[in-house]
Amino acid sequence: MDTGRNTNKLEPKIVHRRRQHNTGLRVRRMDHHPGILWYTLNFIYKNLYILGITLLRRKNRMLRRVRLFSNRLRGGFYAVAEKLAFALIGFWHGFIKRVKSPFVRLNNVRTQMRPVIERSRRDGKVPLQAYTQIGYTFSRLVFAVFRTLFNYTVPVLAAILLFVAVRDRLDVEYSVGLAVTYNEQHVGLIQHETVFEDATRILKDRFISEEDIPIVLTPQFTLRELGAGESFLGSDALADRIVTASGGEIEEGFGLFIDGIFLGAYTEFQPLHDELDSIRESYRTGAEGEEVEFVRSVRITERGIFPLSSMRELGEISDQLRGDDPNAPITSYTVEYGDTLSQLTEDLGVSYDRLVALNPQLQNGGLIEGQVLNVPVAQPFMPVKNIRTIVFNEEFPFDVEEVETVAYVRGFRSVSVAGQPGVREVTARVAEVNGVEISRQIEDTRVVVTPVTQRVIVGTNSPANIRSFGAVSSRGFLWPTDGGVITVGLGGYPGHTGVDIPRPHGTPIFASASGTVVRAVHSGVGYGNHVVIDHGNGYTTWYAHASAIHVRVGQQVNQGDVIALIGRTGNATGNHLHFEVRYRGRIMNPAHYLAR
Image (tube, rainbow, N blue to C red; front, side, top):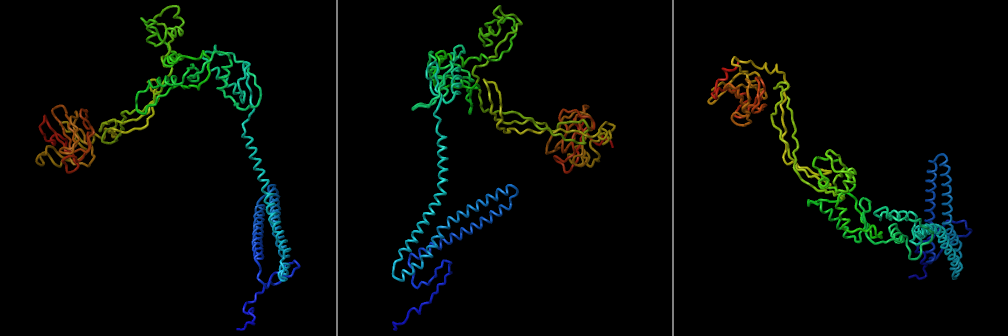
């Protein structure tokens, strides 16, 4: 083994060709492996270079978009937009320049120090000065980056802090109010004069009689700041303090208001509330889902301070609530013979004083027959509305169907099928006030019995046309249908009691003579649908196998009136009329009674 052989000949020769920069330095090939610092700096440089290229590309892309956007603008707006675009471009150029400048400086220092580092390494020295210069440049790079971020973020943070400070300041409760002095006494602190105006109104509402309302002195307002432990007074609290400062006799209680009118105050809340519930529940009927409520609005105030003259006993309040309404409408009553004042007050449900107050003429004398008096309509002071669900059955009308036919003369109307009304179950929500229904809302309906449509036969033909269908025989009988001949006579087959006249289905059947309908039978066997007419002289005629019957029992018919239509009901093999003539119950030969 030749140990003196140059092993470098087995390795490929690597020639490093680098682009020469205009730095004035000559780049020399490195014949030894670079150190970790060189790799680190090279890695940083490559990534920073890629970042720079990306930023330049984004800058060019933005410039193209700004130019495209600017070209679409016109007029004065175009000029403003163009200036804004140039400002943005300038800002972007400045921003890119500030971002790139530290990295460019670092690249320049690295390029300048590279020959020094290589020369020091060849001489076996450590290039501390070169490393120190690179490190110093890198630290300035980091400082420049942080300084740029600081310059951009500080104004934003300052704006946010300003916004938060202003918002918190606006949320702070205004702590300056009006100190109220009433009747030479400090009452409290309020935020606005309207609080005192509302308190004055509440104060007036706490007196039953206007004569008891004290003269409300003009208060004195002093502007001062809210002290520690103080709070602004509301209208109700201020009213309590004014009542206390007025110097009169006072007592705590709960005020009762009906339709906004003060009735009085009571010392306890629950008895007053229970009394109202008792009045309302007395109107309950026990129906399922029933709602009971007062018609008038009811309000019980919170505990407050009331003048002693406004305090009432529970029984006194109850009598007024359960009594009649003094403001009920007035009607008239005419005095009749035998009427007395005591009887009228009892019958009309009005007191003597109330009746005399409405009719001052009663003070001068008694009642006079024919005298007209003013009397109040009796209605409770606290009307109650009941809302409940009721279920009831009601009839509803049937439909009428008119069937027009040329089988009858004009003006003829006959009910072929009697109509029957239907029955439906109705669920309704009913509202009543003192037992008098005021509204009804239908919630659901269900048909229990389906109505039967009434069918009415209406004639549309001329009487001349009806009479021309046949001739009257010497015995006075008309041919019973429109045309045709007798095909099967009396006794044509065993049990055949009449004659058969075949005609198309629906051909009219005429009354052979005037008389009274004694039978109008709808059947599916034997004669089928058939009509029997009694002519009053012992003769009856029978018309069988009809498809429809247009007369009813007891109806008077004239000769030639249409009574039915040809069909094949019952024991029939085809559409035809089975016609019979009977005299006092005996079967006669119809051919002897009909005209040829």
